[in-house]
Length: 392
Ligand SMILES: [Zn+2]
Image 1: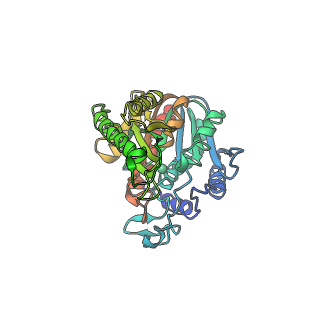
Image 2: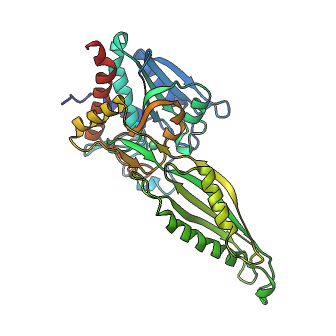
Image 3: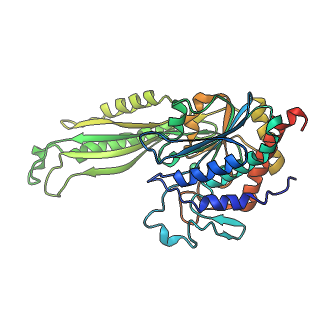
């Protein structure tokens, strides 16, 4: 059993004490701290931000050379504290209070816990840099909580990230290995009718009634989707989350709008799913009213195998630490993994302590013992893959 690293929890506390809520997504302070820490440890460090949002600073820290190239990725922004959330915290969300074997704080588990474990693992490897047989890269990314377009996707598309043999994306998997998450398509459906006074509704065309038929068709569609099953993340879904229409009870409404959330499983083609929903809406029988679907917003799914020796080694490290089934499992929320798929010439996993169910909520915490286990696994993996080869 590896000894716990006494510097791990203080590092997590330091990270939590530098707020980085998104929106607004200003990561300059936390990025500067990470950059300085990694530079002091001997890493080559870059701080990069997109011209459209110069305050969304990312950090890339690297050491060693050649293959295998192993990337440890975690995001440095957090969700903001919602207006009705602040009163529910039993501690200051940015104080990183330790209580009952837990560190409490905004971002304590999502995503500063995996970030701290990754940073400590890399710092401990740094004194052996001369003998590393490969390259280690830390990506501390901004913008994940708003979709990653100006964070990890921007880094990837602009050539700031190398091709990697193995990528570990830090998120909340209770230290098991996740290899898939769903994608999302958002869409808006509009019904258009003709407004008249409610004394004689038959002279008008009721947009709400038309939309009701579309909603029932979407409910049938949602049920039918359950026939498509992915072994790790389950079934695709379709949810009507918002409805707007009409202005007064004594008029026939001439417009109604709904907003949809369609979750895709790995393997579903986003363009094909959009055509499928367009076809569905086109077939709804609404008489003289008109239905249209548009404003598609796509966030892709992610899917990987664990066949390479590096992935198998990682699973072995998890099994050794947890003495339990290391996975692979599915991960229900999305992650920046979807923006890294073009960089992977090997495989990619999602891994970290805690649960996404305590993220994005009041009293967010990480269990200290679980975070130490995360660090043990990462340490063992780096030692066995990049350091052991030269007989260290
Ligand atoms: Zn996260």
